[in-house]
Image (cartoon, rainbow, N blue to C red):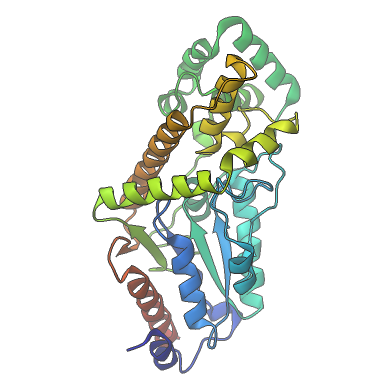
Length: 348
């Protein structure tokens, strides 16, 4: 049955009260087809239940970072309302706590408009914070941060990583000794609050609950064949390079106020491009950019990100898995969403 007809059949009596509207999510690793799937869901439901997309992506929040983040195009964003895109300058961080606050308010507002909130993205920390809850952490303390930076200059970040292991072994265990940004934040939290950063990651999950996301409402796009995803990642990175991704990063560098330790510039792809441009600059004004090395490092880093995303998804029990490498993956996703909506309507 065509999807449009299936929607009409399954949504003959659409749920149209704010309290009854669910909140659904499409999660998956990078390059798994989340944006296309979400747009297909919205298109099929359009006549029966409007959809508004809430981005769950830590790179899409930044303005001027369009190519390397695979940001939805203006045409795609015009077709379906999108939220939490282009809301931050790259100079300013956007935390998981801020995401939870903003997404929760958006979910309420979208429901009040009689629309379906659809969370779409691959930043698993954001999903975890929204589903499990997150304690309020201390705000940044410039004086403490300056002291930590001075210590790092004198002793090196690996030494500070060792210090962190003494007071917060759980956080230190998941950080690389050179991860200056996160080591700094963890030490800052410890010094300001007297509590390890890991203690703020309190799990508040209620049994059989996923916070504001409706039960059974997480659709996970996961590849059965990892080589399929690797090929997709390589093709997408090549497409970004063809769209002048390097030019985008050059423009960001010319601002003069950005640096590679910022959360925005640590996003996969941007970090590797920044490093490549640094290497070129150090080699002299006439040195060529090593595009082959950049491509290799960018693809490897993106594959590593995808592996972490898939590992996180597979640790979740309450999700509906869609094989994103199946020829009819989009059809399967739309059908699963329709079935979930029908089941929810029948329970009312």
